[in-house]
Length: 310
Ligand code: HSE
Image (cartoon, rainbow, N blue to C red):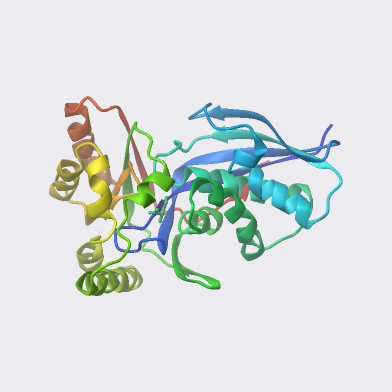
């Protein structure tokens, strides 16, 4: 039988309101599964893409799962090739790290398949090759939670400096995904080119407050910090019913609510699953009233990142 390895990588919520490009956390579900198989012909081939979409490119040069594998093959000067079967659980263009989950699952599967023994730190640059296809700018706020799991702070980019923050286990995340697609590249074009000093002060105060709140398990501080004065005002108009969904989430008891990544998904954090479910139902009512099909995910912050499943 041909040698093959299957890996799973979770979806993630990035930005987390106040941490544009520098914060993210992994969800338990959904996630992407990638099976990598050794084949004789060199290079990467995508055998199939199934699941939440079938419209992703199968051209390896344009596919976020194939790019890390191509880079890994080049790195180890392989003469053989790798064939990929991609099963998408994460909605494409949904704002919960779809491209990152595919890139990470493929990198992790290929690392094991080729017995490269690269650490997660060493694998990250290869996963970045996949994310580059989805976004013009390098950002690892979806890739790193998907790879490591948990709540991640990207302390810096030059060089990349990842810090895993221990988040309280009783925090639950609600994500509502309106069934529209927003490409990260397009969503980034909406962002301001510069930020007023007063907004910088507000945003850094909130980012620091969120980290302190997570570490101190101070839920009121977490709630006070979940505000975004940079990306949310520039992007929220793309999301049907955003203001009403946010108000409904807060009314239902969420600590805070904002755009997940580059949208269109919206996330809220709550202290109990019961509240997180109630928040999901309240946000869903808003989208249902607009006849906007949607999916709600309720999950803890997942402490496990990508892993080999077979
Ligand atoms: N931080 C990135 C952005 C995440 O907001 O553009 C993209 O999913």
